[in-house]
Amino acid sequence: MDNKKQRKGTQSKQDEGASLSHGAKVKRGQLNSVQHGNYGTGPAPFGYRRGGKGEAPLMIEPKEVEIVRMIFREYLRQRSTGRVVDMLNMQGITTRKGKKWSRQAIAIILENRTYRGRVKYGSVEAQGRHEPIIEPKVFYKANALKNKRSRRRRRLEREAAAAAKASAETEQVKNGN
Image (tube, rainbow, N blue to C red; front, side, top):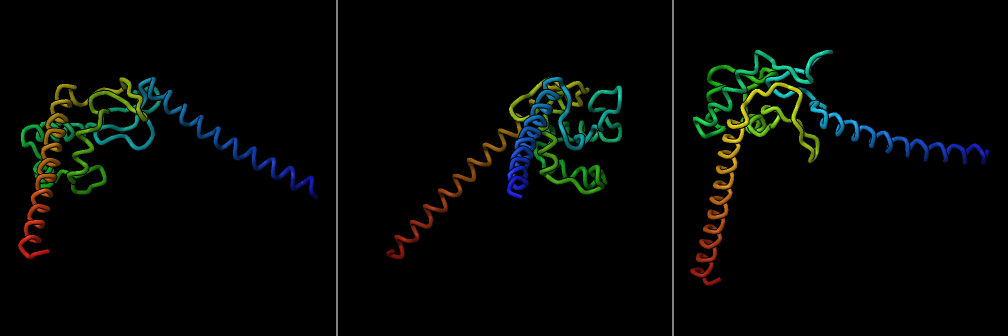
């Protein structure tokens, strides 16, 4: 009986080691896949579908590709994710799941390097084996605008917080606190 328990304990330690080894193998496989230009795990980004046997890892989805291009074009023109959302929703253009667009969904598309032909896993980025939807110049221009607007928004938020704090301190002095 003790011998059985001892073997069972050893077996569970081996199983534990095997699962860690499996996780390491999965991570190594994903990294290797990206280094060879293959898109990682999960669903294909909007505008693409998973490629089948003998195709690139991602294939352009004709029904969605023009929407992706429109999102980039309109963001550069209107300079606002909210306005792009409003335009898409007013035109009755929905997401892949038939839902209305959100600012977050637009932001995710604008930041996704897959659209310019890149693949990424962790800190490793490589040229993908799929066809880009967006020219790198357009991608960088949209992201430069987005980052500029984000920095401006953060600066305005800091200034507003500082003004509110100063106002509260002035009010305390007036009230003798």
